[in-house]
Amino acid sequence: MPKGVTKRRPRTRAALLQAALETFAENGFHATSIEQICERAGYTRGAFYSNFSSKEELFLALFDEHSERIVRRITELIDSVADTELSLQALVEVLSDVEPAERDWYLVTTEFTLHAIRDRQAAWVLAQHDARLRAEIARCLTAHLHRTGRTLSVDADELARLLIAIREGGLAQSYVEPEALPPGQLERNFLAPLLTALTAPAEQR
Amino acid sequence: MPKGVTKRRPRTRAALLQAALETFAENGFHATSIEQICERAGYTRGAFYSNFSSKEELFLALFDEHSERIVRRITELIDSVADTELSLQALVEVLSDVEPAERDWYLVTTEFTLHAIRDRQAAWVLAQHDARLRAEIARCLTAHLHRTGRTLSVDADELARLLIAIREGGLAQSYVEPEALPPGQLERNFLAPLLTALTAPAEQR
DNA sequence: TGTATCCGATACGTCGATGCATCGGACGAA
DNA sequence: TTCGTCCGATGCATCGACGTATCGGATACA
Image (cartoon, rainbow over all chains, first blue to last red):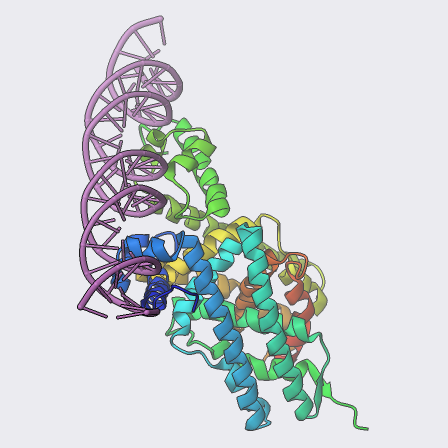
């Protein structure tokens, strides 16, 4: 904690971030006013400008925090899979899992993706995060497949891109029509044959 | 043309719609003011309010127009594939094609998807459109596979959902990092093995 | 060509959001 | 407990976007 910073400061900062996440998820970035965020957090705009210089800066802080969390979660998943079963089925189950809290993050990060497509700087930030994510996924996949005696016949990074595309594209459809396509269903139904088709038994030596 | 409607009206309406598409693609829906749209179209807000009652209404008109166009394009694709080769490769090429103009529509429709996730009414509109789209895709797939003597071993509608997910999710990554992942690359690299794995030779009788 | 109607331009009032300057209470060190 | 510093609340001025009422030119038709 920097010198001269009292302990209530990180609390209000965290409250503002949490309130911002919820409000962004509810109304979108541009549609939410700074005032709305402060109201939900139980503060006034004075507190906001004391902690952030703009809504954009707060958004970036939110995204960074989320990035860390996601990568950490993926890493944990790797370990959990490593400890338990070896079956392809177990891997598919892990990859198909969608937590309820993911919805808010989906809304926020997708909006950030749209922003990144229009803004080179945001694109760079997003690309950095995505690269880390893919690296973890690729590591998980190759490790798991290796232990089951199979090997990838395609580029691991590009396969990770495909898995992310299926998840993101699937979530979009699921959140629009939750009854028609439960979250994770595409992964549950298609990942096993897909991974089987894209791997081959490793040479035994 | 309704009685008492002069011929310049549809022209200005079309100009406003086109300008709106470009401005929405450039800045996003909420970030663009009605004034900006009018300015780009070469009109004033007077013209806007004479043609639309709100930015939302204009957006819906834009989306409807786009929906029609997309379904028509898919149908044309079906015919073009039907006329030419039978190979799986030909089908994959068609499904991997991404026109440059698609970028603007991607930005606009993705933003509409986010809106639909938050708004039941918009979700219904989007679901209707997507259902038509999937129906066309499913028709295309089954027809093509039938002619090549194979048959689907999974639900065609859900496979269409998967293809859409891959396209949308892939485009997101492509537009953020065009050099790292050229548009359509995921389809080109993974569709052939995927479709092969999900089909089986039809019983001959 | 004349005229009634349609359509888009202009001007104005309103409102919400923003950012800042200032103030008073809370916190931490002695 | 006291004092200096930190932090969030409050009040204010500004600005951009919105919607409407009204006006003048364009259009269609006789």
